Length: 231
Image (cartoon, rainbow, N blue to C red; front, side):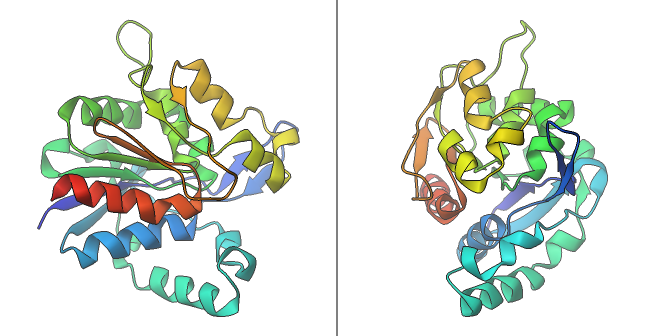
């Protein structure tokens, strides 16, 4: 059994271009699907957030339309409620990478607010990438990669093939027009080789020890790729 670190947002809002603070947090499916895959394989999960705050849930992620209907929504909500680790996070600042076999970042719009500018998270990402340990980052969580600034002022993920929530998907959410910036654009700006898949369809990109997923539907498949690397 290995320990897997979930690095989660502590932000309960995303500040839009007009100053509106849109309620958000983490996206339920992006935690539930990987958590179930990892624990079914016998691994232990530890949750870390900036300052050790309990990660806020984006309540919209429990809506029936995002979970295949009422039955699916209840199933996700019940599964999420059973994840005790979410209620007892450790401080991201206290994380020792040596304690973990995998680092995994679930998304939601929350990381666009806090992890995108969190230097502690940025350093962890740089060290995780260099360690060769599987590093999984899903949906909006690749925003955290923007903080992985190296000593020479570049970005540790420049040149890596990866994906994340696309401009097309953000446009379809209705939020792109009022966003301060779009994730796909920023990933291209840091020099990453962004790989765009069809909106809302699973798209997982593996480059060396980096495993990225484009959207919520990619979270489970990304976890499966991580488990292959642990086998």
